[in-house]
Length: 336
Image (cartoon, rainbow, N blue to C red):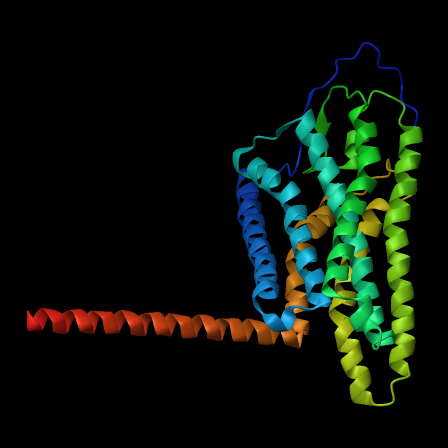
């Protein structure tokens, strides 16, 4: 929307992130809750990355893509959650303009990368079910890593133009961002300039990235469902659906929140539940994703059990060697 002339207003070089304005006791409770979720999220995704790296049975394109998705989730949550936790604990809510811009860029760049990577994972599932004979040549480990790198680069490039445009805007006082991170719409509300053209461009880009990847995923799953129904045996159909169930669950949760937040007619429409929805896709969803994959995937669960058995075996061997050394030292002292 066009904005009135603010030629005489003071230009803000820092911002105050409002976050969750509530009682101190509730802020401390939210800090404890969100910090616990954040630690669990980082630990769960690190576990996935380590498992894929250590377990040979997981050295497959699907799990390499999953490890890359976990890496993106770690970076994605780290962009917003630590600053939110700091504000809840210390009530230090000020953020500099460059830091705010960097947070905006990496949040949307990594979010766009996740969109692209989910589309790549849908393509991997499509090839595995619909073209199983061509899968070993189409989806090699090298090809999957190249696709994952392409998703990362594509997402970061997609977020670059709106970040550059926002960096050129002037922001006036009061410099309060009504959110717990530097989101797009709250930033535009602080601008002293007419942002209608930029909003339209951002909306087109958002629709292109989010809905484009979403439609590619839906097309892939349309072919997958048609192929599964052609499988004669019930066991074969069940196995095929189990292959894509985890990914489909993650896609549903991810796009259910992202489409609600960013595919809207205009960024000036704000809902009272925006912060709650943002907490869901910035804090809660990243924790749910590795849990969904681990609970729904038999190979991942087998790899976890095998790794735990291997660690227990190594621990027992170390204890045995330590006791043997103690016995040898004891008998040598007796001889002396």
